[in-house]
Length: 67
Length: 318
Image (cartoon, rainbow over all chains, first blue to last red):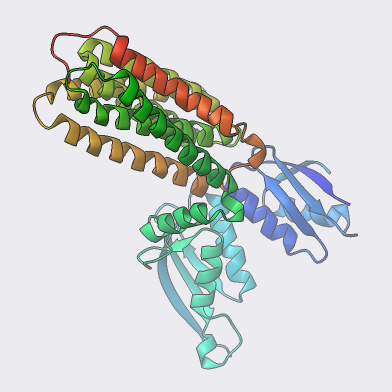
């Protein structure tokens, strides 16, 4: 099932690449798309917990607004 | 103990902290360590285990290839780096062969070629049927040709840039506003400046360029709109002025060069958008062939109406 994560702090293409890389590195998670204009990342968590995903994003200095 | 080798190189494409972080993470994943990184100069110093010595680690070339996949190219590395002409050639060949991520451009190119062919037929008919009585009617052939080029290239670039409206960064939006105000403005101004004189050429070129520049530049706010309007103002008047100044000095040869340069710049704009903003979203392409041709025809008729029925000053081509 796809999840839309609203992220605050993405401002350019590199932010999209960075967060895609970060989330793809979590075993099980697959990234569908990242859009800095919408401030949204669409992923398939495949059973990975919200807290782990949230922590990975926030470790890079971004704020998860909704999950 | 694994001995680390230090490498220093410069990358293009870095613009912010996120870029630096991407590179640092990539280095970590490859068992390398970034010792220094500067987003402003692109200078990077990494320590990396040399795979050539048979130890565990990533070869530096492999690491650079991974950086290139993310858009960071080594400066001075030749083919494939930012600004390298081979990337433009690659883009054009992709469009010509209709590859998957350039389907919007390929469709627009097909529309443009079909519209150009139809306009050429129309121009021949116009020449054969309605221009028989004109003195120096052969002199109007380049005017017809230049009008076809102006109409087709303007409509192509308009619809291509319009696809990116919702995605454009301020910088790219300003570039779109400027290019779309300038090139069509100078083309219209130059044609009508030659055939109708400085006043009509300037007014028509200016209004056309300003209108188009505003329409496409406004997607990124006042700055883009202003950029488009200013470019249209400059280009429209400049196009007419150049034509009038060159009336007796190889005008047609100059106009051919000017229009060829304009068309190249519009191709450059298309490439810039693709490179900076990614593949054009297909759902934003709001045009089919009849609609595309309608706009091309509208612009062509406007130019022809002005050339043959508009007011003229004393000193005009031919």
